[in-house]
Length: 401
Image (cartoon, rainbow, N blue to C red; front, top):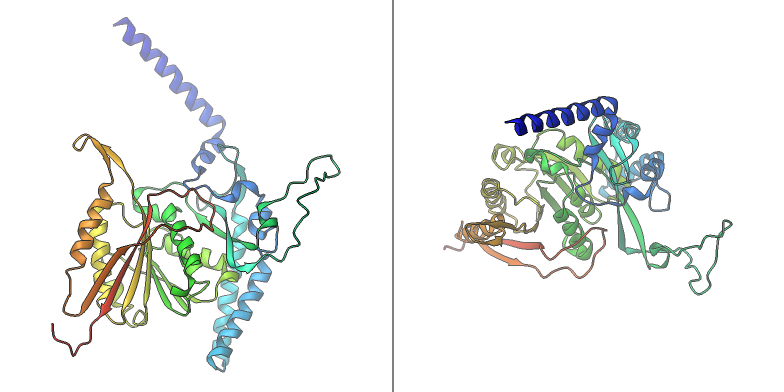
């Protein structure tokens, strides 16, 4: 009995000390929640360098507005349209709104994270702003290559190190992505996951698949892969469930990276469990030929709803191809006495189900793609990151099954 009382007094003392420490240092308690789910390059830069950039790959806020004005002019000129006063007013309003979105970067403050990382943290939104560097395989690095044979030092006597991007023949680009560092399960889309970066690598590796197409992204999360697809596509419709701040978050990220986009983009809601959100977009989606999805397989009920949505979308003309990126997540179970990936195993059974649906009008072809050999984004890639290609060829209506 005396031992229980003794331990109780110790635990009470520890609890009181922790509460006193939290009251004295409330900022440290808040910052502790800013640890990254996915490692990015944000820790290497100051606030100004992250937002405005320190190299040719980034542009200033005002340059972003100017670039968007030029893109509007180019799109109208290409379509042969003559803008009336109403159209000009609408565009001016949109430019002002985008400038306001860009100016909201002032909400972010520079903090030192738990691991010594520099974190751009918005206490108002409880989000972080990260810099995702990737090598663009289609833009050459015109920087004069340094002399790597002769060692030189700076004025302080330190060695002048040759950076990776200085010797690469490819130019480095940067995506600025606002995202959550940790969320509840229903808002996991507001984080950045490995499957999204892997799918982004696939888009950069196979741009011809997306060039000139109307691309639809489902469960877009923060919109990272949609931004990469919009570098090559003609039109990109970015969708997710309208929950929390996610649709506004996608719009802000599209605006931040507008200088990289060549496609028209639009943010809409598609809820896997409410197909009325598809009904209201039916006319808008009629030209979609490519669908992309990343990291939507983590709950069996959600997998069922997702594949029902895929069936609905891909049973309508034109013929479509869907690219599904995911990470097989293994857990150890006493029942199997082994490490298994239950959500992935369940997906396989549901893909078998999908192949048997609407056979009178759809010819299905599903295959697992070979692992990517190239990596353009900086992240920890593993063998559990995979991509499935799902093709739905619409049969001629005159052919009877």
